[in-house]
Length: 328
Picture 1 (cartoon, one colour):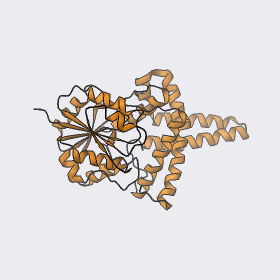
Picture 2 (spheres, rainbow, N blue to C red):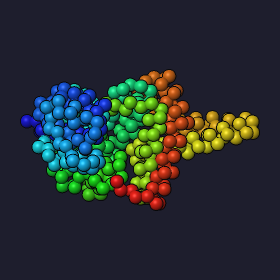
Picture 3 (cartoon, rainbow, N blue to C red):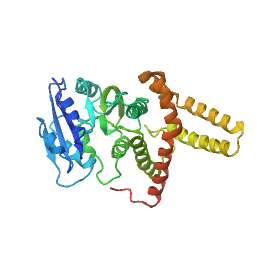
Picture 4 (cartoon, rainbow, N blue to C red):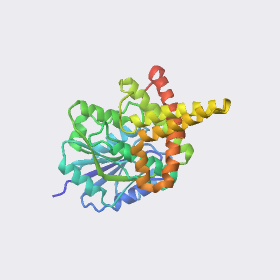
């Protein structure tokens, strides 16, 4: 007998993606599930779109953040299995079947899925991000954290845990939740079969803004918890090395412009190649997904441009750690 799954979707001004998200949920091949969409005081007509689907809609009277929306959805759920996704995630037709299979194998754990390598909107910057996250999240069977864009957990365990922190920094509530459960002896595992397609709608500016914002809160959190050198998901040692390498590379390039000497440019090339060797895992993932031409572009972006948004976010995160209010 199947175990009922409750799909929990927080939504705040997600009118551009929530329709595609819920169409995919509705098209699931699973026979025993419910979907609970918690609208976090949207002002863009999202609730009207949600109301067209045969799912439960909970409207919050004031904006409380994604954590509160997820917690409200979980409290209203009737399923034994909670499956958290985001309003810009699109399920495959068999995603819920794979969720139940994974849960049956490890019912006392928190199980993580990830983004499919190819984004729903398959443009360069969107698929770059999707491959990067897929690789980063799935490279360890037992991860440091599980992201809430594809998280499977029993309702009983979730409610007993206290849920996601509601008075906390945005973006990394799921990191705090995961770390808290790990400290309490709960095992986290990743299942590469559980995938969702993400709608990024990225161009270069949105890509860099996203990198900056995530790095800002990640850095503040890691400094707060004395884990800045940890190898944690997308905040990997590989990415940190890429950031350091990019800074050195561009210093050498500037030196070459000011003082034309082959030493500077040759050194820059060698450092870049070494950085790519350190990051060979994600470079291979680019190649497996999209081939050589995409990989060349992605390697250049990952090694020379993307790190500066990460570094800027990191600097802002240090200030947030030292002087800022890290709560919402």
